Length: 372
Image (cartoon, rainbow, N blue to C red; front, side, top):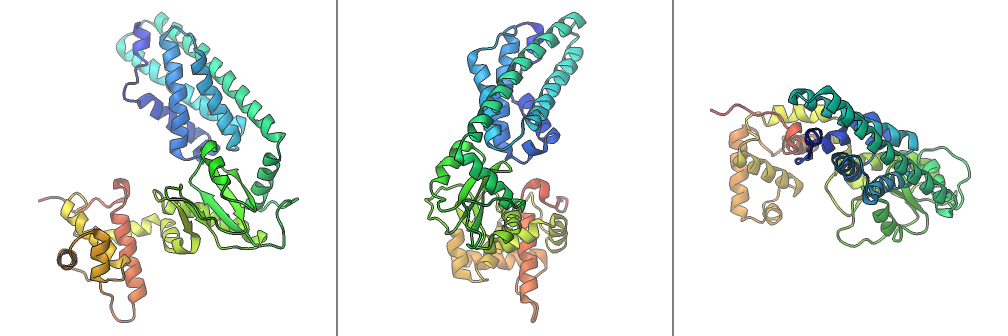
């Protein structure tokens, strides 16, 4: 491996991950896709590019196929070719900037660095051409099918744009579904169960309008379903279903939108959730495993209507363990989970929100008191 190729070593995937972030920042339609979906394709293309560059600029057919899959899938996900190119160019610029910085730090001669830049340009241009070609082929194939015509109707209804609604029945009510599915192949397998209406990838994720909710097998990806409403009310339901996907991230199966009302509402005001956590749980340290155990027990206690036996069953512990943890939670926080007279609903909701925020990802948690 020559000195220039050494600059492209990406054993820990740092270059690929940085390219993913750059693509999402510079292309809104790409950012709308699930991050894992973007990472899956971008990593494959970056690996192909780095492999070809280190091999002297020779691209294998397998490298080109990775770019072709990226282009075709983005077309099926409704990402315009211009937005696709914005993300690709951002990734290419990131690679060039990384190589230049590493080359200067390593004292690589300017001539060697220039030759390497020419090699990068040749490889990424070839990948870009294959990607764009595959995107256009996929678009033409979809344009010739009834499936694409139905997808266009689905997009118009979900976005409230009007127009010809066939094959939907304007006098009928439909459930709006939004799913945490972006891979076209996974979407097709789910579409077979979402019958009687329209289904497809809209805004990069699975969406559907169906007259009745389906029975889905265990392990089905996350789907959020609204009540059946007239077509005129669908855009509002679609926006709520999309918001609910983020509020219950990590779940699976079919979830009804009304059941997620509190999660959706609280997810829209994260700063207020952190303020509640700071106020109610200021004596807990998120770095302390026992404190986290107490908070998890308190949340399960609230979710089970403050009943000891169901809470113990949910946590797979003895009821006496629940009693002890709830008592210790009160001792340490200096607060009571039992609501005052006349304020039960707000009291419980505030505790639930504070605990969910405090137990969330590390970036969303308050720092906690310093260790002594």
